[in-house]
Image (tube, rainbow, N blue to C red; front, side, top):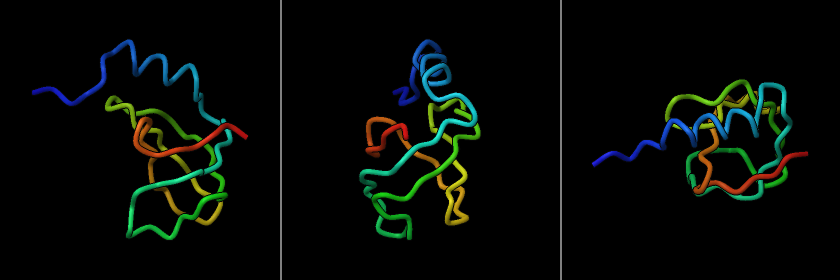
Length: 74
């Protein structure tokens, strides 16, 4: 079973969230992170699995997962 997004989906995410895009977290289902709703990040890249690689203003580098995490463009 393949859980990876299609190449087309990854390319769409890369167009939608290019490096430098600012994002704000709405919600994340991760009990181990200190990142909170309202925290902001800068997109570094989108990897081949469709994860949005972020540099958070708080210093974290936790990725966002589209369809799992809720976030918006600032």
